[in-house]
Image (cartoon, rainbow, N blue to C red; front, side, top):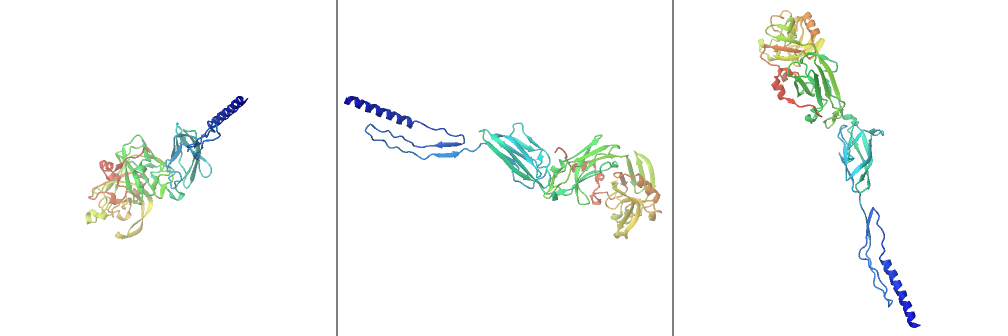
Length: 424
């Protein structure tokens, strides 16, 4: 009976060893968001003599695997002091946009564009002044993990809005020498960028060029003149996309502005000071000739009293105008039918005091004097923008005589000042 007992004990011991071996080989599974590692783990086995082997283990560690998708905004989220037309965008690297929207402070959703590959977002409409815009959304990475899209941008304040203007204004009918002027409420720091926002369209097409001019009121402007006088009947459209455009650090365009005007009949005044006449031509044909007196400076040596030679442009008209020149002894002198032709004080106007000299000698302070009847007749025929071609004196019209000296320059000289516009 003893051998059989020994065999039973041995079988039991073998079964126990098998159970221990199976237990030592089992393992668990890892989650998608973590990595778990265990170093140096060893299992013990109980011997047939009842002894057991030593067991040791190292501590396990768990770390989070970050999402691979990232969001980068240009300008960076949180940027303030932005122009309302700043090109705002963000891109998702190693992932794609799920959904996103930008809202203004009132919760209105701003128009947006998302690229076909769903990696790039761009704002698609001008923003307002003095507002903070909030972006919210999500993106999913190549690893299947979702990341938030969250940020904001803030635009410059309402106090930076700056008015700009176009001359001639809408619906005006003007003369064939009229310059076009886009005037700015602050001197543009980046002239090239601003010029890209300006364009002109003419019917028929007319050759011309733009140049930067500082006007007598202190404002900088882009001025346009055609190579030759405008063709009569030309339709002109000027477009200045200046809303939100930065002029300087504290000035941004308040609005986009346009002007649509028409070039009227071709009327040119020919004023040869030595002929003592003022001749009006329509389409090259004389329609009026008035006895006149011009500046007497050529006779007495005072250059300030010389009527300037060169092509002037009718700038304004006043049936009554108070003239001042204390240097020559008059202040607030009322003159009638005054047509300004430069900013140096030159007018074509009525002056009964010089009636005896009109048609025979030059006695004025630089203006062209006519009789009351002739001055009124000419006044009623004149358009803003009509050319007045003065000749016969030794002093030429120039920038020293005011900002409208466009036609006193040759086309080559004007074109040398020209700058490219449009294409923004």
